[in-house]
Length: 310
Image (cartoon, rainbow, N blue to C red):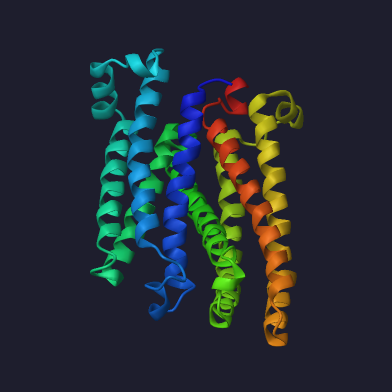
């Protein structure tokens, strides 16, 4: 696989920042104010670790990108080439903004115990900004003119909508995979209410993902010949991504219209264990699928689009 270090770091950075932003957003729209500072969904330590990891991955990612651009190894990156790319390119400017945003997120995570309301919103805003800067390391950053501006705006919305979805999966994994002996009836009821709330927010996120995905594809490739999709590596990976996304939609539909109502009925009957088991199995599948999608997206970002080959 070409540019493996770049792909691996891009994958890890995407996952890290999307979970950070998505879980923080989840705590604001799915939990009541009195529930946010409890052990139900602790945020301070995970946010600190994710922010710290984001700094390390972003720094390592820039080194790997410069190494790929200059044709050197990770351990032999020329300092002057690194400074030139950082100070004289849009990618470098975006990286500086990202490092500053993640540093602010780290400080906000440390402040969650002292000023939870302000710190939580600051954490979300800085994580959103960090995700937005990732657009300049992908194909949208290289698109010029008004089409480029539309492509970048669409790609930012695309990634933020994906972060909401991914963060919801991460949050529910924490809520629902705790040992049942440690979960009270009140906690299970809160988890069920949060599932219903996420279903509404998730529907909006899915709609935005589909809409912006279409805009991004048209901006980047136009309408490629079907043969080109199957004949090129880029096209093959794009088809795999679409198939995985379709699987995610089916799992999301299963959760919303079958598993979540089943949990509500099970809570009313006093026996939520079977319903929780079904939700856990669905979350395992969703997590595996979304990680695979992120890996494919990280790989796609290093390849030339189909239209570049004519």
